[in-house]
Image 1 (cartoon, helix red, strand yellow):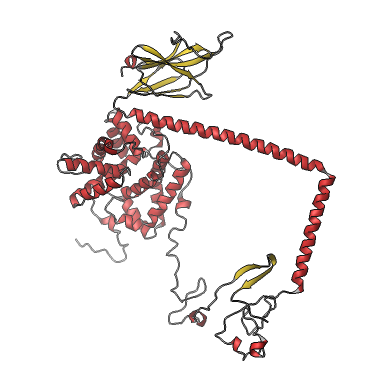
Image 2 (cartoon, rainbow, N blue to C red):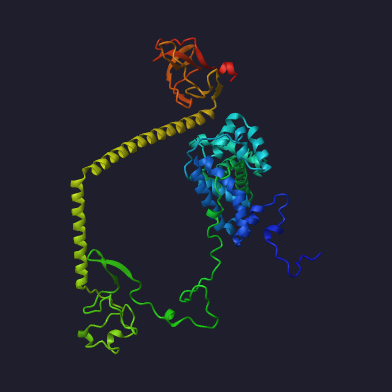
Length: 555
């Protein structure tokens, strides 16, 4: 059977005819077509990868606005480098998402770490069938390792030094379960070099490796067979974005595709060739004579203020010549507009045969001031003096507008100060919430961490208890009414070796959310109702609001 196409058929694109087996790569085809200026392929790239890039930015930066700007920048850069990405050794999808991940992590992650397998996140995900595989791989992990992978997938890896080795191996095993690395011995590696290569490849695929680790990875993947480990790790990291996909709130097509394909729409004239827009010189015709002449010593015009007034502006070129023609007087039709009359002392006349009017003479506009300039300046000064006099008379006649204006200004200043105070309070609350979220995530991944659900009839309570610290979180908590004439407060107690420890009074905000970090060792926590301002006896009351005991919860 002949492989040549019939006459008149559209030539096939290489990606369409390349045998990729069961691993089709439509994104590479879109990149190749977008590199050729295909507008529909570029729009398809925005539709396919826009939600995954935007969701990755939202989970890493914690800001929808930052994620939107990041998405536009990444997609525009990928369209600019579409030919390079299509010709790289990575699949098209992995190449684009790897660029997006590295750009997002470079912005210093600052948002909250979200669960990637929580039921409330289902509506934010894609309809890709590979999502089920990624979710199963995460659900098969222990809770501590799953929290580690979720944090790393969102740009958080709070480990330094030798403490990075074991978490990196956990990441390598997860990525290898998604896309096998293909190392000798199977899995993420069996020998010491293979294990190290897989761990470093996983860190770099998630954009978490430092300079030393990247240099070591380059040394370990110098061979062709070992280089595939790094490539497969990047492919697996790209699949994790299936669980972080969030569609953008606005249409990105206009922002991303602005100017796309415009570079090849028109013909760019060669240096020295000039022609009017929309007209191309016919073949064989030379360019106009003016375009082939050498450029003058002074080129362009500059509007420069003279004597500090707007009405005395002149076009400045070479230094002025004595006796030159004023710039406001029109020149003759046979001479250039910027060429002044030659000085009488040098030529003795102004005829066309003078030396100053030759082709080699440089244009020299001169300054000339007329009595009209001084009169205009005097009139302006008189108008300004009259305006100042009217303003003074108005202030003397009607003081009430001034007083009203002063009162309004004072009220505006007070409003600005109150708004600044509210803004500072909001920023402080946001900083405290971020600090608590970071502490909660840090305690969650420790080896001795014990998550404890609370037993309460007032809100939902949870705690994480470790050997040296504890964190308490609650939502939906409401304050209690007065007990007669006595107010009541919620007081937090801990127990260490069977002895109660007073941890202070809990403040219940309006939204009913409580976040407390206990900087000392406790075996269990409980909250009681006490009389205001605080129970200082050292013995908690029997009115327990919430009980967080690891033994009761089975942890």
